[in-house]
Image (cartoon, rainbow, N blue to C red; front, side):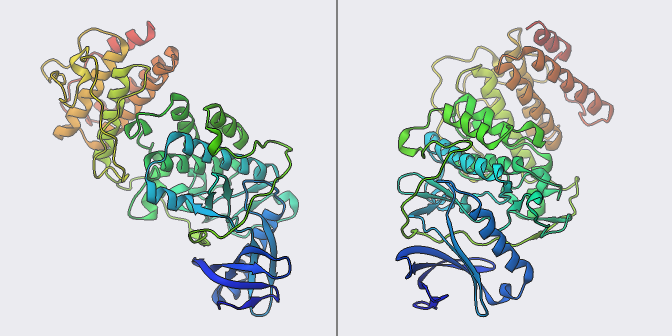
Length: 482
């Protein structure tokens, strides 16, 4: 089809990428004498009324948006021999390619990209458009660091605008690695589902891979629904605490626990101080538009994503790499507890943790551990507490939590404690440590009370076997005492 003229004006020059339902071409608009990207549905999709309607809706949804960080929409047409839409051509690469080439991105660049995506989503949500497929391949970054969000093919438009549903209530649309729990379950979604996807994208930029990876979509969706991600501090020692908290909030399972809006998330990202070199023009509610240079992208534009069937999710599905993930959680937790409120030391990433990233080498500590429990992995001269003396020596609440985490991890490694049980308990301790790290002593004490209740339930169900734990009442007392 190269050198073909589409619609009497779009001179197709070279293909840029091919997806499940369409091919994207670099083209020249001979009427306006400008370059453009043309998405052309394949023959089978042209015969599908739903595919044609998605194409029209993508054009309508983007046409109602006017933002520097959203790919511009120029034209759409459905003729006898072709169905296509014409878009802005961005001089840059997809974020997916950037991550594939560079792995983990510098914190400043990741923050800037995420802030611009949130700015674009804020404008979309204000216009009644929910993207529903935010992922690295739908985020383009040009040579100046300006972000362009694209591919609104599965966007949900405001029903008040007279739109009807394209998909049934029992269908899931989107990409499983970046899908909010409510979206994975086929429940109604709003802009907070896009914020969860931003959290997944931000996690991927910082860790080198999305928070949940598995060999089958059903496993990925189950992880989104029921499991916490491995804390980012297990992979990065250079994350500001405020950034770690924001990622945690974006990845909350319940939409109500996420930031209240995309613009609120954007403002928190900007407050982290992204450098000007990676910042897009300041935007906000009611802001006008600007114009970005358009040239040819260096790599294919994102493919069109089709519909996914709703998976019959089984909550008893075996989770991927459960024992190894528990080990990562324990390592990250102990480093956090030992280092207090400062920047945690980096933890090594086990090869089968489900996230294919290489952790940075750990820097030697300048101070010896103050407690035997602070070196549970045996990396220094101290050793983890033994079964004969499970309780850590008296110290701060952090010291006691560190000793408890070390015991749980040791028992999981020895096979005495099932990996799933160890992971659940370590996750609870992570929540206690996070509250204590933030100075929320009352909340930390309440969370530890919940931990004690879980331990009691597990003992009643004979899930703890002969595992000897320190005096939990004493630890609770230390937490309640502040």
